[in-house]
Image 1 (tube, rainbow, N blue to C red):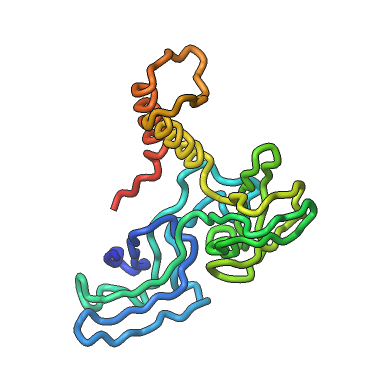
Image 2: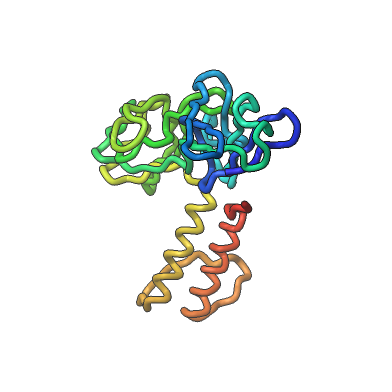
Length: 239
């Protein structure tokens, strides 16, 4: 957690996980035992993500950047300097991370709903755009397509996602559906190629950049790991 900001502005809670998609509840108490908790009323704009993620909700295409933050703003009505520094104990429940799931049943072309193994985050209403539903990619080789969710049958765990428009292609059970930034997906591919080379695979095909030099297996594996780490650098958090 964090300390209240100077003046009469909202307090900023620094969470351990990011990006914060939605704040479920906030409770505060004076930092003396036993705690007497007060629940901050929901639905009144008294708390929200400090830096809502960009490109997940209300977007026509999945995000490619490490947007979003790990802060939560809470009204100074409930957290302020009345009790001095470290004067409050705070409990907060929130949804974080890029919505990510896979199909639990075959999806036919033209379908407007899909059965998935995790609905978490897919039907969140963005504090930034006010729009409900995440935009993600169905990763299915030549049948890859972008979908936008408008509703979910559950807030977390298995359920059904309702789509803004019908599927253009059929997809088999187990197909990945994700809002993860494209750079993260590419980094994962590089790590997999590196692992394959490290364990002594007899044949691994990796795209070579024009003008790039040819490298042996061990050196090539190291290069791929370094490239993946560089791609993921923007996703590091500073607390």
